[in-house]
Length: 350
Image (tube, rainbow, N blue to C red; front, top):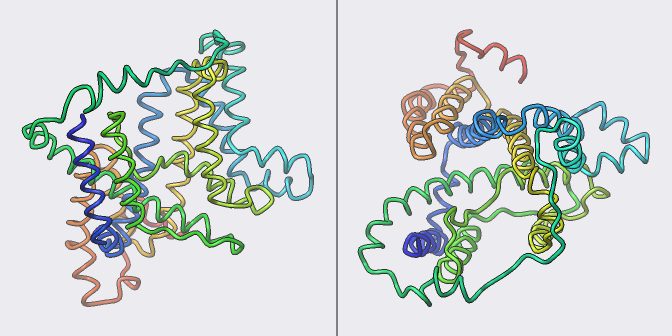
């Protein structure tokens, strides 16, 4: 694990320091970028349906409806413009859905266990971690561990590459409606930050999921509030910083941890359903014609089911097979694809 995380840190550093990561992201075709974003949405939806929904079906379904209503409902948004109290309520974002899960799940629907509150701080033992999980106690990994970890490190970066593209489009979408603040996404900087994070964790607290460039569902929850305006969330960076600071504080407080613990799976499901919805409209908005939609949708399905490597490979192959040749001969925006599958309904939505 130490060898893997340090290799991943090295890959991030090389891609960020040389600028290669940024150049690759900037040259990715629109259809492939759209496929990555739609694939993230599909993957999130499949996770909820196949894994999370089994935990507490009615609680998740009702909490999802509440979250969608507060975040995406046009009717609720118009009512908030006319009523101060409704606006305050709407500004809470996904929190009402989370409170609903905490209260209704255990006590009314009885799909979740009743919280067993523990009144203390979360126990921390740095000495035990350093002795049993780090280079300071276990010693430096032998060369064979780095060699064995190389394929997985490359796979991890492929996944992270898709996350960089998703982060860029999320930020662009969120800031399009806000002229009061400039938020710049820099892929080279994000690569270097990810390198630092993985390097520190690899030495002091190896982390099995590794440290990627973003938590998509969490970031989307913040950006949906950011798009509500300055009075709701004055600063993008303030929102991200507050979210992360609150997370750190929350996990240190056992009363809060034990209160949320029974509903944690529901909380994760809520962030994933927000990701599914938001990735859907962001991905669709990027695509200009039926060729791009077809490539992106096919790629998204493969990415969600087979993983990032298969998804990226399929998207690039389809781009050169379908779009690249056509763009050399004619304007792809003028190419019409017959009414196959759902192409006609997509045209109407456009």
